[in-house]
Amino acid sequence: MIVAKKFSTLAMAVALTLSVPALSGCESTTSNSQTTNRSQLMLVSSTEVMQQAEKAYDQVLAEAKAQNALNTNAAMTKRVKNIANKLIAQAPRFRADSKDWDWEVNVINSKEINAWCMAGGKIAVYSALITETNPTDAELATVIGHEMAHALREHTREQQSTEAMKNAALNIASLFGASDTAVSLGNTAANVAISLPFSRSHENEADALGLELMHYAGYDTDAAVSFWTKMTKATGGGNEGLMVLLSTHPADSDRIANLKALSQKLKAQPR
Image 1 (cartoon, one colour):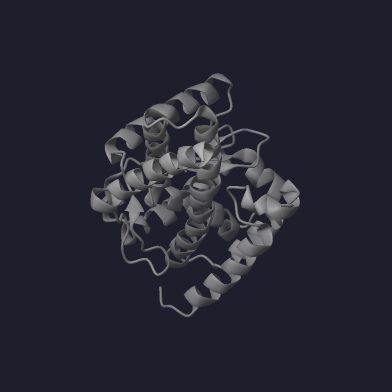
Image 2 (image 1 turned 120 degrees about the vertical axis):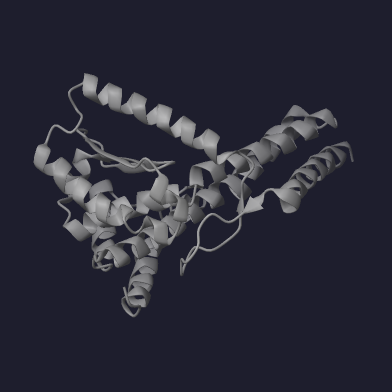
């Protein structure tokens, strides 16, 4: 009975916290998308997240420059920037204020196969992404568009807001007398039930919106399928079954199947 009471307290605290965004914390941050219109939990200010991103980006660039790893290949850098700029030109279709963002695009010499776009349009592509997968321009647009979509949908801000809500619930539970064990178990449950699924949904959403960016920028959206097939081989794949439940990324097979379906849908739409 005592254990049941502790978990009841935790459940009540979670319920109280979940009721707050229902009253005042949800907003939508994009428009005119065929695939990504939904309300989002936003408890952290957009300005704060963009300031964090700008500071972090400047630090990354400074470290790369100090290591002589920033934009060392002129041809590669020009290619990445040309592709990114075509996608950036389409961003206001989905988020009007992105036309005023201080977009930046840089290539970092690294053995890591990666790329990212911080809040406010701070883009970095790692050289190994190109040297290891040998992408076509459309395939490279796939990954850049995907990362841009994370920024356009403010996924970092949404993730921070979700974590703030979860931590508030656990703090309230502690104040109401929940044991450390109950709070710890509650945190684990919240990670599985809230945090990780949000991250997987963000990946799916970024795939979809990134594909739309590609479509309107004039790239063949079928390249998304070939790119992620290459990535599966380059990284070893293996996100199937139970691993998907505990991963922030969708299974490779699911991602590729979804992209095939979305690509066919977009091909039937005018640019």
